[in-house]
Image (cartoon, rainbow, N blue to C red; front, side):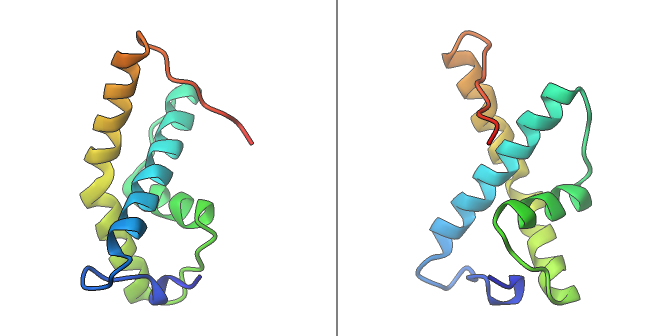
Length: 96
């Protein structure tokens, strides 16, 4: 999929797309935590695109994805926090 063809908020598949973005962010965040490293929004955006096999084909598409990553990063982090609490401080990462 090309980033320029990603669903927008008016699209029927928007929620599914947004949830995939959040899951990819959480994946990258866990990996970075396990490595003891931080990641900025720009690199995170590129990692998310890679995990979703999305080609960032235009500057506008990159900016739209970057904005979505920034807007949903807190949601992903909160999901990770809740998972850690439910699992007694543990979060299992399946490396593929």
